[in-house]
Image (cartoon, rainbow, N blue to C red; front, side, top):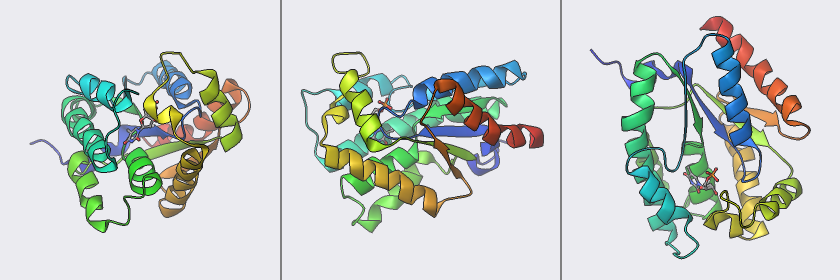
Length: 218
Ligand code: TMP
């Protein structure tokens, strides 16, 4: 009998942080670290990593359209519902580690907090609905000072990584930063703050220090 998502999440790890925090690089390095220890690893990201998700990502990040906050929220949740069913749950059911670049904490921070939708308390169950009860066992929040993150975002103008949300105001990016800090305080057991300053190697060492006890218990 298939197990409920809450029972198979122990190998589900999400990477979160403000734009420009370096989480994608760290996710790739973490996958290599786990594979070197014999783990089967699936790496994935939101939005975009499902058959329908690519189209949703294009819509969400296109600078040519401006969805309302409600439309934006629902598109991220549509992407997640498909992604969980099609990619994350099957990989976990096969015993793989799943490293996911952004997940529900991004929605809680970008849409509910920074877009100020959180006043509408009826929205939280919608997030749970899209997740289908699947919460990560561990979330690594890569915390970078806002000024450094904004500098990195400026540096990727014109690159493949540039997206509509990069062009939000400094105040929006500040709200995102505060949103992640508040979320970490709310869920200190699950969300671990990683100091994202310094070299890529230094940041990776901090991540491995958090992961090693988890591997020992696996
Ligand atoms: P990425 O640049 O990390 O691929 O993420 C794309 C953008 O989407 C980034 O600015 C954060 C944003 N985002 C949300 O606003 N809400 C969400 O739920 C997710 C998954 C991403």
